[in-house]
Length: 137
Image (cartoon, rainbow, N blue to C red; front, side):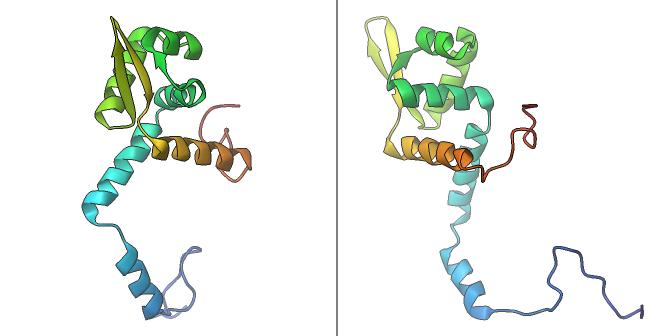
């Protein structure tokens, strides 16, 4: 190989070619930095198995108190409360007080849609395998 030749990685383009119209399309459609940070934070929030388990429980039941969420998900109440605090602060769940109990529900249809789409995506076998994400199943 000559000293002026470059070695391309397996994921690199073999031929340097720029498609300015596609590059501009992407640049025009790219979210502002603040929105990208919010989107990233949302995926990090959903990336925790305990929080995801709680969200799917709320998706199925509609509304549950901390005790019922803990029983339904085999999670300690303190862990449920801590997760709900984070989910509520992020606007993913909302609470309704009734006497001494607070009932939690998904905040809006967008959250329900995101959970439904995720479950559907995984169900079609197009997502990472369980072994690939470290669940050991």
